Image (cartoon, rainbow over all chains, first blue to last red; front, side, top):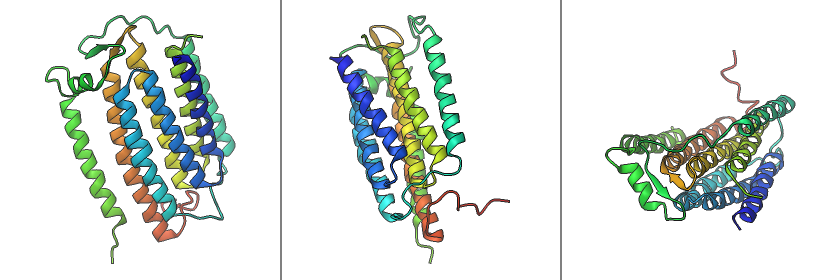
Length: 170
Length: 105
């Protein structure tokens, strides 16, 4: 069952991603990108990450998707669409090189050597992750409290920066 | 056929390469930002796959916490990036990255 879900979701993700790059209509590309985000949420569910799947749907498919569609509406240039630049062939070459390198490393590495991870919160599989993620984020010994606070400062800076950038100067 | 860590890593590598190709080869700035989001999603899949499969029969939550931080940074990046694109569109009336060469020497 997990296998079938994985292969279907993989087909949807790769098909939607290729369409995002190849389509000339930016609006359709954005809609297919949102479909790709939903399929990635499904991949998270097959990986026993239910909380992340919900966050993926809320933040990526919801917030970032709407933001992208707003930006397309505000900057739409129907005649031009989304053409390729003159770097098309070198870019394809570089992307294939990166793909070959990563796949070669993944296939030739033995991933079964790790048997325990010290100083990390762990949980048994097939349980809800939400409580364990709270422990992993906020635990005073093995948590990520300082990065969490820095992330909130980053979001505040991004909020103010976005307002300052699009504000009418006159 | 049993799905394991390698399958997820190769899926994420393919998704990353598609995003990289799009980010390098497209001219519309909004589409480039969309391709960067694809690349960030590929990295997130890698993080979550390692958190599930690195040690058998146990989930290491560190990978999922990292994925949450990546999503936070991606949301901030999308907001600021789209604000910059809209500011460029206001002053130059297009979002073509090949014509945005004011700082070219």
